Length: 246
Length: 82
Image 1: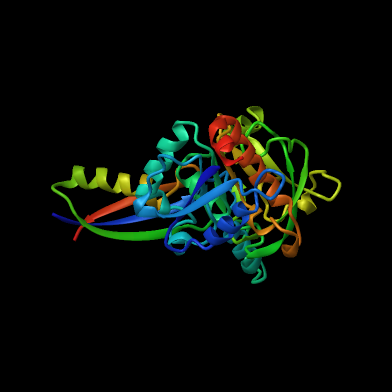
Image 2: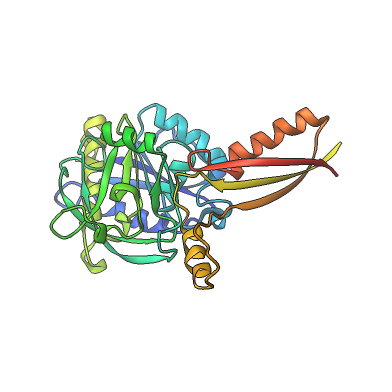
């Protein structure tokens, strides 16, 4: 069974949703494929975990910049170590902002172009399947909710060119046909960028909330596909764990 | 020695400034010929340091590590003794 750590900072609000969503991800037959533990940010030890989630919310009230204060937490030192060892890390919404502030992902997220907080459903196209969270999802169009005031992805021109050239854009806002259009871009992000991966592919961040669309009663199950991808990836990395389950 | 640092943070010229754009629109309605607005913020920090050179190094660290994000912002420091 995949052991997944979920970080909690002061102001984090999506940790229980991730806990629930991950409990739904597993091999066919209704077997639970993931066991989760919520870790308070000053007491984070990721040894023995197969993956780590940085959930959304308003860590430290978004003061200074969204994610800026969380970056100085002891949890980030441990997260860097885990990332360097190839551990899968997923940051959603404020978690994505924290990963960018911690320079685990390039660029930054600033106020939405129209200065509004946006709560809506969007579609994103998966650009790459070489990450633990997007296996088998290349070119899939996922419908997911967003809820953010600072989701406009920006970077200097050189960085944008580099992340496009190296294929680090993992999710792009698209319309229902899967086409990148200005209308499909909810927040003014450069090149409709909704999420990124690092060069190694183990660190992933996105503004949408996969944990809020993991069962039908919530209006969609596309987010579950990312968690099932993670459970499968962990199983391939350490087959004895899944073996113990069956 | 006690110092007061005023740290000015601004988005880099090539990074869009949605707040500045909103202010530009609003000032435009006053008909004063406003053609550009950039916003930023000012943070005033009082702290102790052995001498001016140490104080400057400290403010540089404050700016780089927390008060500004070098990916998208520039900062400038005015230093004075308290």
